[in-house]
Image 1 (cartoon, one colour):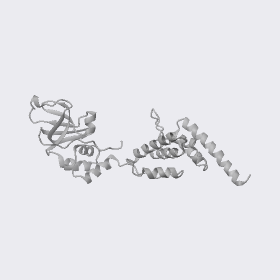
Image 2 (cartoon, rainbow, N blue to C red):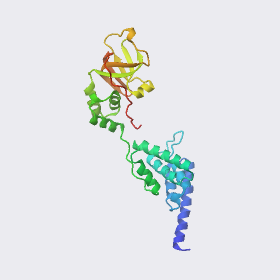
Image 3 (cartoon, rainbow, N blue to C red):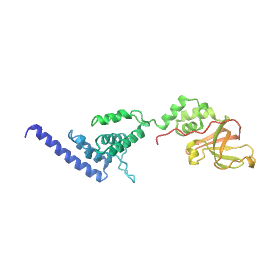
Image 4 (cartoon, rainbow, N blue to C red):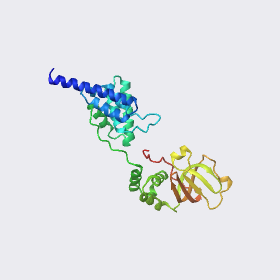
Length: 274
């Protein structure tokens, strides 16, 4: 037996041994060990790097268990990579599509968008690695700061105010709050509950859809019974921001009025990545 043949046989035996260890660890829900041993098995030879059975096992080592297991560590980038590799090696087109779809969902979940996905997938199709670096999505605080630097608070909609006042740094919250506090603003929302002196209103589309109030509108004098809106009604209103609590978010607005002027329509809150 030549030295080359001996080394090849040794690599094969090492691969088989590590594969057995990895599959055993995966069966025992020891995810970190399974990932380590399966990676060793996959990298033991060029043939193993194309072994769909091993690649598939690796994808399973990154699937969050149900119910949740404290021993499991989420890694969306590695999950995206191994599922992308599985999409290349899967024997049937429907399996290839399924793996690629899941890989893309993991990538977008971590990165916060689809940009760069085509290059990531191309790298997975080209070879066994290494896993490309993927930039994580901006944190909610980073998103809030970008909004503050890009748009003056007076030109923001209510959903943006809510997002910044809920997620922004103290400085960014102050920029928005100091600009709108005590100033009459006109908005549109959905009535959750209404009395003659106070309306509970959902101002962002997300809270409208969940029927969660995020604005308490108070009046200096009781509203006539005939003007009190029904629950679920769309309402144009005016008020002056007086105070807020960031979580759960609630803005109290005083000096409520029901103006005729066209208000700013409700919009979705920006995504936070949670």
